[in-house]
Amino acid sequence: MIRTPLSFLPYLLAAVMVAGGFLWHEGDIAAVRIRAQGVAAIGGPFSLTDQYGVSRNSAYFRGRFMLVYFGYTYCPDICPTTLAVVADALGKLGKSADQVAPIFVTLDPERDTPGVLKAYLKSFDPRFVGLTGSPKAIAEVAHAYRVYYREHPLKGGGYALDHSSQIYLMGPDGKFIAVFDETLGPDGLAAALRKYL
Ligand SMILES: [Cu+2]
Image (cartoon, helix red, strand yellow):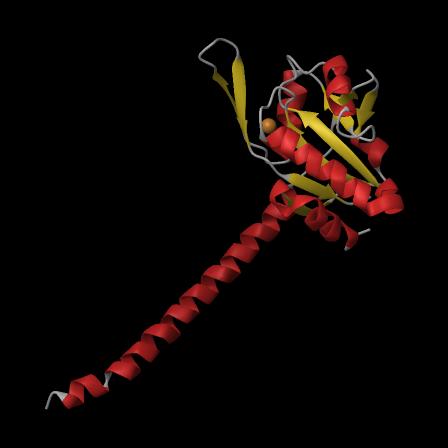
C-alpha cells in the first residue's frame, strides 16, 4: 500500500521539473526582451570638452569605435583599475587599437577640469580622451548611458562618488554594441574587442 504513492514520486518530480523548466524559460525570454530594449536605449549624442579644452561632440567620433567609461579622477580604486585594464588591452590590440577611441567621461566635473583630466589620463595612455562639461551636460550623458552615480561626504571633509563601473563599446555609427568591466583583465578585454574590430 505504501509502495503505490511512492511510485508516483518520480512522475511528480518530473512534472515539477518540466513546469519549472517552462517557467524558467519564460523568464529567460522576458529577460532577453528587456535587455534588447535596454540595448537600444544605451548611449546618445553628447557635447562636452576634452582635456585640452577643445569641444568634442559625439559626431566627432563617428567612424571609430568608442570605448566609453565613466568615473572620476579622485576615485581611489575602481577607476584607476579599469583605466589600467583598458590601456593594457589597447596595447595588446596593437595597430587595430587605432579604430578605437578610449573615452573617459568624468562624473565629477566640479573637480575634474580639463587640466586635471589631462594630467590624470597621461599616466594611463595618451590616447585617452577625457571629457568634462557642465554638471547638467554630464548628468545628461550619464543618464543616456544608464550610469549610476551619487556623491557622498567623506569623514575628513570633501566627498567621494559611488558609481557604476562599466566599459561601453559603441560602434562606428555611435550605437551600443556591448558592455564589459574590469574583471575581464587586459587579455580578456582585448580578446572581447578583437571580435568586433
Ligand atoms: Cu571610480
